[in-house]
Amino acid sequence: MKMKHIFPTYKRFPFEIVKGNGVTLIDDSGKKYLDLTSGIGVCNLGYNTAPIKKAVKKQLDKVWHTSNLYDSSLQEKTASLLVKNEDKDVYFCNSGTEANEAAMKLARKASGKSSILAFDHSFHGRSYGSLSMTGNDKLKEGFGPLVPDIKFANYNDQEALTQITSDLAAVILEVIQGEGGVVNGDPDWLKAVAAKCKQEKTLLIIDEVQTGMGRTGKLFAYQNYDLDPDIVTAAKGLANGIPVGAMIGKTELAAAFGPGSHGTTFGGNPLAMASASAVLDILNDDFLEAVQQKALFFWHYLEKEIQPLELVKGISGKGLMVGIHLKSDIEVGKVITSLHEQGILTLSSRDNTLRLLPPLIITGSELLHAVHVIKDTLSSAVVGQ
Ligand SMILES: *Cc1c(COP(=O)(O)O)cnc(C)c1O
Image 1 (cartoon, rainbow, N blue to C red):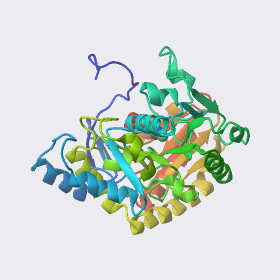
Image 2 (image 1 turned 180 degrees about the horizontal axis):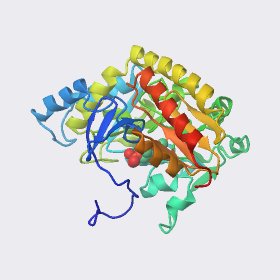
Image 3 (image 1 turned 120 degrees about the horizontal axis):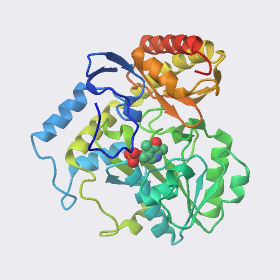
């Protein structure tokens, strides 16, 4: 199909997904796929998921929009599931970009400072604020001038610590860079960054838009590293596909976000909240433990079957967030297309990386099947084609 009336901001694959169930998607020709994308880390609980569908349908029959001018028990319930027993507040919006935009505004207003330190190869969104904090010059081309007072440091670099000074409003980072090539933050480095932020009284913003919602086996990936961020942003997996974003900040910051300071028409919409609270109900400790077990199993086979392959440079990630780094002999796009033919949907990321973000409900045998198909594809790939 030629999409004649849509701005061509995306290069699309020439098929349409028309139906989904569990971890299976079906295209417009009736072809079935095992999904290892979750719609870019969104449908973490799969497709057509009964408890989520039920919660949304129930709310659909009551009321689907009211604005933020009235109390919302659904927002309060979702927020309490997000912050657990911590002294934190939530601002709901509609996307990861908006969550990071809110984080940037809150950090500036609460600190009274303007400078923000971000990292090379980071991705925080496409609006002026979030794009300005994104460490990818290609995405900024032609859009200048951007928001001033944003500085960059190298990710995982000790030198970056010297750039964390008391004149910064905030430091923003992903603990695993998703769009940047599935780059794991070194645990010691992450801790050192967090410690330096505390020492310099600089706010630490952790962007969990891709790594959050159970993706790494914890509700938030930073919980793997014993960090204590001042602000956390979430979106993608939070409502399993109904648009939503959340900025979670320490309650001590709340005075800077008083009535009228920031706002949104759709943010915290009842349908999104019904879905998000159903998602968070499912992401309990037992569920997350099961994700960790599945990930252990997956990583065992990734290391045994994929890592040794001629075309593979290395594998990175954590939990069910995986980057298979391919040598330059083969283009990741070709691998993705070949996997489509074999009924598997995958993603790419920076630097010729094959990225896997399977729904968290995938089974061990489905993961094993994926490993074998990826192995066969990479083994039989014609180098240089
Ligand atoms: C996807 C993503 C965003 C942007 O989220 P949108 O919902 O597309 O605005 C921000 N940060 C990270 C880490 C992401 O992966």
